[in-house]
Image 1 (spheres, rainbow, N blue to C red):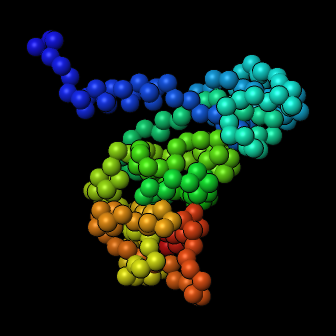
Image 2 (image 1 turned 30 degrees about the horizontal axis):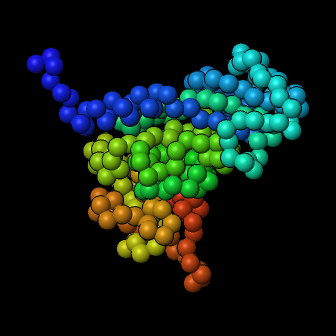
Image 3 (image 1 turned 120 degrees about the vertical axis):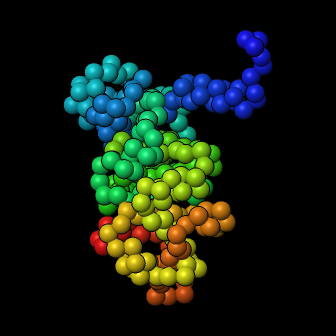
Length: 261
């Protein structure tokens, strides 16, 4: 019937899709802005720069075809957090669309190596993970759409350009994404301090098969459902009793172990 009322979940989904279509991000800092300007896949909206920053970004601005808005450094008025080290450059952009997990996992650039983040909300940690993922040739960093660090200027600055090149995919359900990766031939390894096998031994068991590493937020660690969905839980061995690595450092160690098998 044409006048039938839409179910609430359909209405919510459509509302979220419209909100995402309107969403923009302000990137800041010379490095992050330059890399975004040079990225043909990035939809760019507004560039605000001081004369000094424009001199340093001249080539990137010319390549982007954008018309910059010059501003006085004493009145640098853009909607970024007060105290952000913007270096006189800010760029409003649309979030990147990397496509779906299956396409990236099967035929993406780099090694068949993926990092999944279970509710890691600190943009600095996620930015550092993206940087390590790029360094070690991973195909993607994957996080749940909710309860994860959104694409922000702070994340982009920490990622030091990697946000423009390293796929950062958002999924509705992390456990379902893990199952999907298993069906594509990935071995899913959770990293946790109480893992039953050391990381090196886990990698030896996996051999050359595709690997997905799963890391949880500092403090809570991996959620129960996430842990249950892993093929194995591995630990990084420590020489001292002073605690554990933070999530971005643990990701770097795990990526190195997987990339150098």
